Length: 253
Ligand code: IPE
Ligand code: IPE
Ligand code: MG
Image (cartoon, rainbow, N blue to C red; front, side, top):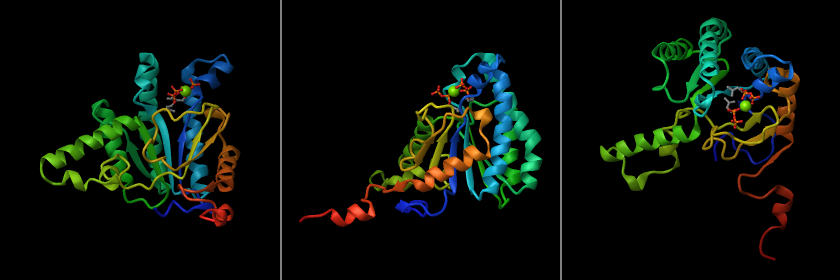
């Protein structure tokens, strides 16, 4: 059991929060605005959330910004979302860096345009030694794709004789995921009222607590974040064990 996996009601934390930022399109639709306006406001919500999370002592914030399935959207929307990410990295990087934020990007890199890939590499390299909050941006990210890429690496390590097939364990796989050096999230928040995981952190969220809020992502504010953290601290985490009081009653009579 890792450090982030303390059974029982949580007195502190979570230290790693992951967010499925959903509802930009509906936010715009409700106001008679085009979907891209929702995405623009969603970016403001992201900026706000980074500040709030850091203020509230969260050590790692992972945000789902574009999934491997989001390529199915109309070309104009996909291209707007790509431009938005580019803009976020270029424009916000200096400010994030100055605030001590360490930026990481997870997801497949080979499908990204070369200029975007270079920007991502630059953002990671220039903030690598920062000691503040880690912001993990899941971009062109899909958990199944990530696991397949990790399995491919594992298979080539076996083929090359670097690892014995019989010696493969959970850490052999998790060490080859994009999140290799990151602890698992303790809390996953999804906005917009949808209650599904949509291919996000399937492996890493095995024992995460989930909080679903009806708030649409562009409206997500400090109060909504604090509410999710409070809800997390009310939960009793068991990791397959038994809770303390009932635990005393369990066993052979
Ligand atoms: C989340 O908002 C942003 C991305 C998935 C890129 P949506 O664009 O999914 O908004 P809805 O779900 O259509 O309202
Ligand atoms: C999940 O939202 C992906 C991101 C937030 C980036 P979607 O809006 O794409 O998910 P579905 O299609 O409703 O499951
Ligand atoms: Mg959506």
